[in-house]
Length: 359
Length: 145
Image (cartoon, rainbow over all chains, first blue to last red; front, side, top):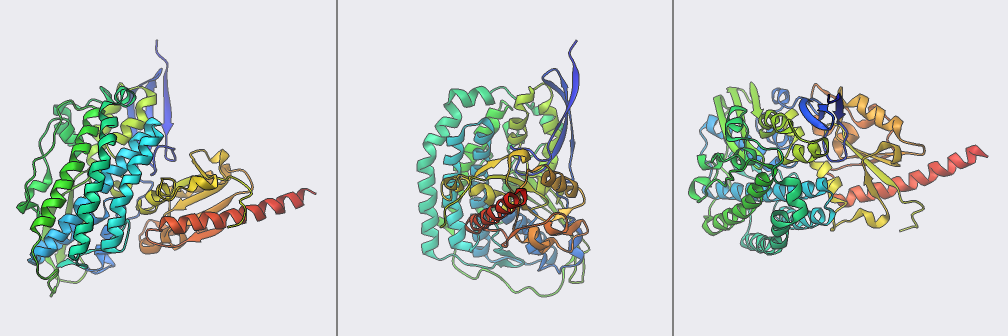
């Protein structure tokens, strides 16, 4: 009979940049169950909405997570704008889209690097992160920050991009697109990578729907859903189709993210081609009164922002649900039946963002 | 730069950071900044680490983890607080679950401000930490005599 044991995983673990804890229930080396426990980086950001006025809170919303910071700022601002009935200028909508797509590129390249690192494929990790630096340089040039940009504000954006900056962005994405070719080939065709990814951590279409998976995890299980098609920011004017894969294994999740990178390049190019001239923000008068649910597509999946105001400059409630929160049940399902050595890799394939989850 | 007397190993822990500083710490290892050229390696093992890099303020859950990691590291050891949250609590200072900076729990030797701290300043902080490490080592040797 197989020997049952419980192996604690985390909170401090070499493969995870962030603390999360799992109790892995093993039968010999096979995982039969996993009990996640979270709360290591809970700060209580939602409560802070009572101490900062609704315009200042953008800075807090952006610091919910450092990787998807631009998207959190956007989601919060759009929700408040909907409550207040503010019409954002067209140029601001396009600028927001360009920055959010750039942060998707940076997030996906970061994830590819971490995946390669988890496999022990050091040179692939270094190459992915080297390419990511080009996007960070562009952030540095256009916003003044590498990670936290603070460009979104209620009523528009704070900084404009001139035509030189837009040309530099196009140049940077062209460079990355060219240099990505060998990276994509390695991820998709290399024997070692395939042997780690193919057939591991399968999430069926039914499970993905039942467990409420989001983002690339959902799309890799064959469900064509992308919140960008709701048409917030400038996505309504741009053409895009959700990228899906049918297999539902780690390899499919990797493939979806690789294709999404190229989709983001196309979206950035299209947005830069269509960007209109005009003001970048409108003055905001009065205080928000009412409530609104805003849904946006973060690099990791669909995120929901809820704001409720009662006519004072402090909001009554801000609530968010982030993609990693909805992907954790799917992760627990994926882990069942895998080998202990595959656990770090499988945790990575949902692209966990613990600081989003715990806030 | 002066001669580095030791190839120190880093241990990185995220106390309650937003990820911003964490990915910048990882960024230091990658080709553009390449902290490994100083012989510095990011290790996951506290028993082999000389420098503890901590990002984010301390909350009630991570407090015991931070203390445990610090106690597991061999002497001499240096603590670097990366990012303004690790220094003082920063933008999250008023959150109900944040105790404050890392120095409320363990002694900190080098403070690296910034939100998020840039890789250049993190590398600078680590180089300053090396100096502190040298001094601590010297003091330990003299104690033994």
